[in-house]
Image (cartoon, rainbow, N blue to C red; front, side):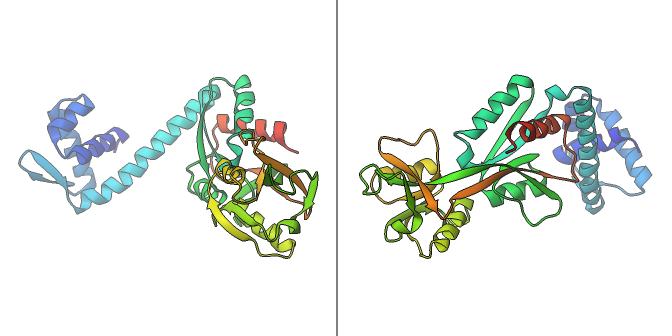
Amino acid sequence: MEWQQIEYFQMVARLQHMTQAAEALSISQPALSRSIARLEEELGVELFERQGRSIILNQYGKLFLKHANRILKEIEDTKKEIKDLLDPEYGEVSLGFLHTLGVNMIPDILRTFQHFHPKTKIKLFQNNNVHLLKQLQLGEIDLCLVHHSFDDSHIQWVKLWNEELYLMVPSTHPLASEESVALKEIQSEPLISMKPGFELRKIADRLCQAANFIPNITFEGEEVTTLAGLVAAGLGVALLPDQKDIDSSKVVKLHVREPICMRQIGLSWYEDRYLSPSAVHFKNFVLSHYKD
């Protein structure tokens, strides 16, 4: 059995029409028919049911198609690995990152990396911590910048830096003139926070618990800039990382002295999965340039 026979079979199964499949494969219909017949002879079963000009998979054909798809995918992956080894600079890296890193850190990382590797293509995936790690487990992304990793021995996580979380208050707020505050000073204030499930929300809940109060959450969102906009409108206060696009004329960021409001950002990858040379270059670059 040759891999080309499997490729021919896959095309016929997809189009369910011998003539159309032959045209798509740029071979003659008799040559395609002979290839399918040899394949069926080798397997000892017919794979299709003929219905006029159309053909459809029978139960044996459906089973063989499932394995054929897997075989051809392995061949394509092997070709990609070989191509990457021949010229890693033309490779592709799929990078996941937290929403909150999209304004400041990601542009800086990509700009610096592409200075050294301008031909490498970077595919970006922006999501929350849990979803990114699930994508990593499923092999949908090569690397991700997240707060922490799952309890999965295959997922590696290396801390890169600490990111301070500030208490963001409207510029007209009574605390706006302070240099620093204790978190308990806003225990009676309306708190604007990320939606449940977001890592920033979990951190904010834990910090409020450490300050011995249950937060009065009045608004929930998914983007730091949106929450900062609600703060600017005087609708509450928020615990957020600093971002360049927050309007400093309307929002004041205050250092929180108690409890310490920090989160850790690190790089994760799946240890036992193939990483292209381009992805390895990117991983090593990030670890060497941004590791705290």
